[in-house]
Image (cartoon, rainbow, N blue to C red; front, side, top):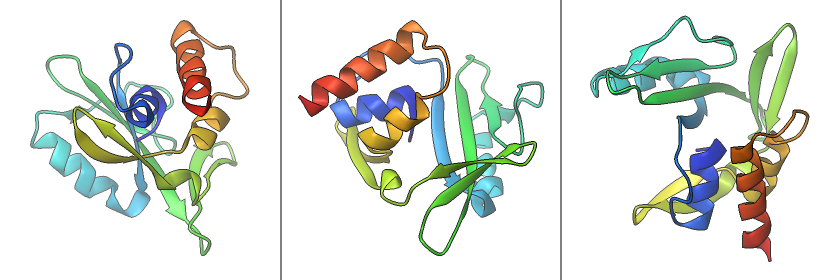
Length: 140
């Protein structure tokens, strides 16, 4: 789990509303994930940009959204996300080893370090500033 829900998992509580759930998984399991989410009423939305290879977005009738980020793992356990146009994003093995809690349930999530890395290189929105401040609070 990464993004806003991943930050909230590290905090152990929901701290803000979320538009989507970001999941990183082995690219070879994308079909399996899509099938499981389909059984819960989610369907692929091919109109979302960027789509594959960077992400596979599913939505349900209630407007909930799951962004699946397919990763190819190397021999070091690092996950590489194909961002298109020859670009790749690295999810370090250590960064993928985070643990958190959502609604009392233990979940795997990205570490605070990797969450911060995902917030580099673009203009921050209010939710990004909130997440970064929460990460700072958790470190403090």
